[in-house]
Image (cartoon, rainbow, N blue to C red; front, side):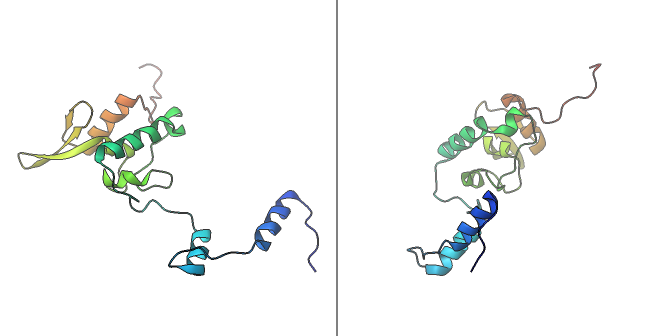
Length: 148
């Protein structure tokens, strides 16, 4: 017989341990249920295909409600946990979330990054990211020189 739990945390753990796992109605059966309980869903790929405009709308809503923007913390990367999966259809994994707001186009044999909102063009990824940070008022690198 198990002893009674002595704290609220132990009560939650004991309840979790004693909760039976029921198989999900899927092709995976019980193995699929165990997998889904063991690991949260990842943002490896887009779940449904959206138009680029709709995907940008979702990313824009995500940015507007984000804490990192308000705190001027470093922005997340495409493919990071918590970033909408549709970001992967707009930018490459590992790129800044701001990469979702411009398109890569070819001009005279070179890549150019073009802002989808205003048409501003940059020849370098980091400059295009800086353009988006300026538009959104995002300042993750504060100036420490008080004389400036």
